[in-house]
Image (tube, rainbow, N blue to C red; front, side, top):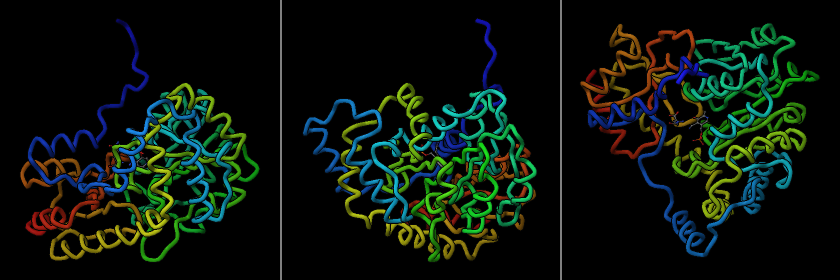
Length: 380
Ligand code: PMP
Ligand code: GLN
């Protein structure tokens, strides 16, 4: 057959590659982001209750209403914003589908979409497969901050969308109030939709608040917020996420959503709705992960790695410039194959592949896993 790939430069995702390599070499896997401990037993019991209780047919296209109601409560609770469960909240098959659907619903061939690199790996292909043009802006290193003057210069009459991500994967940094205000000013009155990937919304550390777009009224009026329960409930395999947007935007989103997945796993949505009635599930999550972050930092303090700041997410960047001159990919491969520890090289998240000697480690792991990993890191 004769066909031209729509995504000629896309290979297998780095997460799949590194997790497979970790398995092959029996290495400790701190590469792909997922917990190595189970989710709450109560959640599993709730799921069993709904599957055996007969809730095994299609959920409504928008998502199970009890779950949408819980999400509306969560947003009001955390960000003092009102999103209507009927018309402004949709349950998705993870954040990946929420991001893809947002792009597919609004991006036409030739439209420009601004992203910030290093960027989560699904953004660029989702834009390109829909004919959009990626305008990548490098985050300033060190610190991974956004230069708003550069953003202003990059906006043209073709800019249809700006995609932001806070807390940020892969850097583990977070945007500040001032960033959101700059963005709000920049897009006000322009025909630009902001897509805000907030999947780590409940993992912001050191007493800081998550800067959700939902907190900024004007900005929220032209934004789609995407989140995921995978991180919040320690069950990345459930692939249940959600999207919130003002009614008119959500109507367009749902036009695509209904023909992409129609609806999402019904009994699991109902279990989640019950589970989230206890708001400590999400309100206390930052304590849980801050403790893990601090423990990981303490364990590796004797190593020759230098630690980058980590203000959110469950990822920590470590700099190996005192240890090796290798490229980050070479170093990550060697660490996995020869030392038995898998991490993600940071350059793969940027189109210009900057070599800053950084690896990303996922600390959503049991204490004993972090201890075994640190033992290896301290020998290097
Ligand atoms: N965005 C970011 C920044 C992520 O790290 C991830 C993956 N954890 C996703 C989106 C995708 O989330 P999901 O697994 O719910 O599709
Ligand atoms: N979000 C996870 C990470 O950054 C991986 C998700 C995936 O494998 N697609 O590691």
